[in-house]
Structure formats: structure tokens, C-alpha cells
Length: 457
Ligand SMILES: [Cu+2]
Image 1 (cartoon, rainbow, N blue to C red):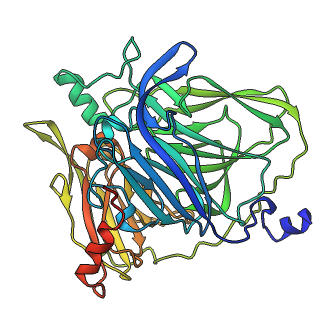
Image 2: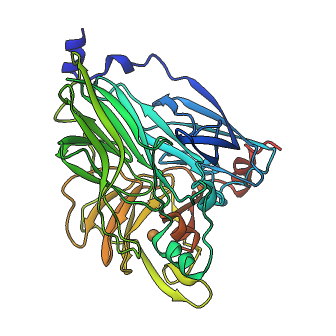
Image 3: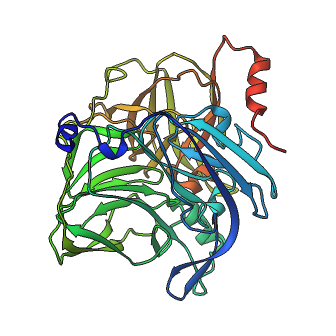
């Protein structure tokens, strides 16, 4: 039976009967969190843990997630990568932030399998830094069979000698943090420093990596061992890619098949240096250590073809919108981070069903991870060249002086959406835009009704 299922590439553990309703309660609060023995921080997070609980569902399920705000300030939750209705997207454009003491019920159907995550979308530079994030995993029967699965949320925190969060203070450090984004030397994997990660010799596991840091570029390296990239933001790739390193920028996800390793091996999960033109120089840093234990039989099977991704548009498709990202000196703030020469932009609407071909032109001298809310896109061209492979993305690194062409289709989910740089300090400094997806067949009164439906006051 198992053999036959492998042949037709179905995962027996994930065969679904019918779709269901999956309910979770998330309570946002302040609490003490031990990041290492004897090292405790005053975190903010969900259900008194960093990261918050892993939320899981199968493709087609309805997720109902009740968020209670027990913080001293408003919050909201964005479901990064999930193609949900606009009113559930968790941004200021989509909902009134959840006031202290209030509850908001998010409800959406998960239509794609993949590694997603949730995080605060209010006062993010503070709330995300303090730990307000968690993983959301959607499984499907077409997922490859592995011997196990681990989720790794990568983060760093900037703490002082007393393990308190630093606040960007006086003018020079303030401008550096605004320019570079906030990076700290407290390196966390699933909210812990220096974790030991066990794996059995002979096993191949699926590791879902999520970069939940404010600004850190994470160049994954497993002590030089080869691993297969099997998926990214919008689920599986067409074919595994055998590599020894891969860049994961803030907001991005990479799924890998790790192993098999040999008994007794030990190696670091580390980030190699990636130079993104910051004031503070990037360092090679270790986030955790893998220890390979006693051998076990493997049932893992990573096929050469994981799925098919239909191309949305040819690489030379005509551009429908140009987005220029720039960083310019500002008298008031030192630096402004701009979209089409402005900060905090309201961009033109797009129409349901009209293929979008956007050119994102990064004229600045530093990298920006571009994030589109609610819709997956395909990169169809980068500086005039077709990419080597197809992938569904919601976050893509735009290198300095680089033009990237993306294609995406606004399906029938009208409302207010946004795109922004996922370096949280750049987003806060203006590199963001709201835009509407408009469906000219829906009367305005119905749109208002949809928009207000889920507020619980
Ligand atoms: Cu940026």
C-alpha cells in the first residue's frame, strides 16, 4: 500500500477525507520568556510563547482564529502568504486594530498548501521584535513523504546587557537602525538561543524555515552539507534544487529536505555572510546545532517532480505598473524610504481578473525584500533575464540597482491590499503602499457589509 502510494506520489499520512473547520484561540499578552537557561526577556507574543503556537490545517479547511488582545496597545494579525479575503488580511487598510481587551475573529479558507506565518501588523517594529509571530502550515495529500517535519522560525533580538529591548536612542544609532533595519546579536531559532536539534541517522526530514526577523538576511548553511530546496513561499517547487546554501530574506520561507546524515555527526544551522550594504557589517553566525542520533529506517521519498507550475505570463509581457523603490536623505528623519518618490503611498487600484505585470525597480544601493499581501506572484524577469526556475512567491528580494518583473492575477477578492518592503523599519519609514482590488460588479453597499462583518465589539 505504502509503496503504491509513493508511486503515485500521495502521502498516506496526509490523505484527507473531507474539509473541516479548524479553530484556534490566540491571546496576545506580555510575559516573561526564557530564551536560554537563566536568560529571560519581557516578551510580547501569542499564548505566552515565542513563537506563538503552530497553526495547522489541510487544504480546503476553514480556519477560525480568535485573537484576544491583552496588550496595553492595539494590535492586529496578518496571515503572511495566505490568500484570504481582504477583510481578514490584518492591516490598517482592512480592519480597525483590535483595542486592548477586545477580540477579533479571523475566518478564512486555506486554498494552498505551504509554509505561512502570522505576525502583528500594528506597531510592527516594536510588536514583532518582542515576539508577536508564529507559523501557519497548510498540508496537502500531494506533500512528499518524509520521516518527520520541523518548523524553524529564525529571529534575532537586540537586547542590552540586562536583556531588555533597546530603543533606538540618540541620533547616530537611530539613523543606523532606520537604514539597516533592526538587527541584534541575540540569535533565536524558535524563540531559543543555542538549541540542539536532534535527527535520526538515515532520516530525511522536511524543514520549514521562516525568516521572522525584522531585517536580518539569513543565508542558510548546514556545515557545508547539501540539502534539497523543495518549496518556498507559495508551496512546492516543480523540482527539488540541490544546494549547500540558500538566502532567506525577512518574510520569506524555504522548505528543504534535510538528510540523511550519519550517526554522531554534529553541525551548525548557521547564516553565512550576505552583504546588503548596511552600516553594520554582516557576520557569519550560528543559530543552533544539529546532532545526529541513532539510525532509523527511512520511508522518505522526494520525487524529482513535485508538481507543475503553469507560467502566468511570458517574460516579455507588457508592464502594467512601475514601482520604484528609493532611499533618499531627509531633513527630518535622516533618511526616507520611498515608493515612486513618496512615503506611505496610496497606489492605483487593479481590477479583478486583469493580469498584472509589475516592474519593481530598486534604484537604491541596498536590498529590499518586496512583499505583496494576499496574492502569489511569479518572477518572470530579473534585469532582463528569465529566472532559472518557476516558483510562487509573496516575498522576493530586490537587489540594489535591479529591476524585477513579476506577474500576478487579482482573483475575485476585492478590497484594500498592500505591498511593502519586509525590512520592518523600511516599511515604517515609508516604503509601503495600499491599493484596492476592485470588482466593478459588486455594489458598494455590499463591500461595506463584507468589510464590517467580522468586527466583534
Ligand atoms: Cu527595504
